[in-house]
Amino acid sequence: MTGVIDLKAKSSLNVGLLFGGQSGEHDVSITSAKAIASALYQNPRYQVQPFYIQRDGTWRSPDVSKQVLDSGKALPDAELLNKAAFFLPTEVQQIDLWFPVLHGPNGEDGTVQGLLQLMHKPYVGNGVLASSVGMDKIAMKAIFANAGLPQVKYVALNRWQWQQDELEWSEHIEATLGYPCFVKPSNLGSSVGISKVRDRQQLKEAIASATSYDPRIIIEQGVTAREIECAVLGNEQPQASAIGEITFTSDFYDYETKYTAGKADLIIPSLLPDHVTQAVKSMAVKAFQTVAGSGLARVDFFYVEATGTVLINEINTFPGFTALSMYPKLWEYSGIPFTELCDQLVELALERYS
Image (cartoon, rainbow, N blue to C red; front, side, top):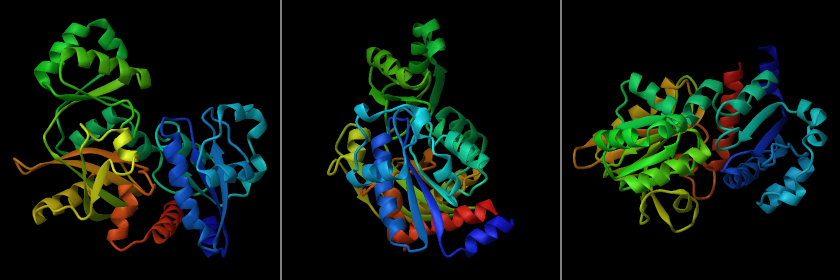
């Protein structure tokens, strides 16, 4: 407790900015970190020490990491060197607070959060439980179902089950969900490895693709719905932002659509009936509390306009912070500009650590 009070009182905080990582969202992490670093540099209280994690898991020194931030590009494979040579205990020991800007497996799934917890230092964002549940779609959906949060119909299975009896599973999926449906790796983000399928042959191909990323997969019923998102900020008393909506002309909201300028439009605020807006906000906070969230999250929904139904899709425990990202845009509209948002996340990390 004393250490936390001292940190809050310190006029200068050494902030360790972790980015990159061993996931398919490596490049997105660099872009997010670049934006967050720019915001932190504006506050004289923060002394930012960037730590770039290469695709092979190597932690690089702050000087090399700053070069990656400045360029906005991952190190080429030719620069990947021996892991042991670049673990930096001296620099790590100097950090007062960690800001992990990592998306996807080995970053957003509780693994890094567990490491930082063992360091006995505060860190921005969700803890081990919320991070792991938020990354694993099968566990997430089970917990949401237990909390009474409505969702689309889904089927969960693993690679071994599929290989044992493709025909039986195909018939089960068709009878339970029908077409179109969506095949997703259980542990991944940014729509990586997701396919929309309309027949059995596409289903077989999509499952082969999804299981190449994760042996555990989930298949969801396709619905005709508007894609709605809500940002959550806080710890024990989380607040919901204004509601945003995503529109796009592609077949679905895939990786390319998410991160290519002009492919999707973010509508803030979404033009929803007041009772729907309030339902989304309430469900977003409930989802955050259900997974024991802290700091931040973006909660995504489907609004089935034909029936007036709101269905929860997923919770993202470290959403994107790029120029195209919904999370910071929602809070900016709600009265918290980007720089202040980063400050609040640091304060929430200190509060949670206490």
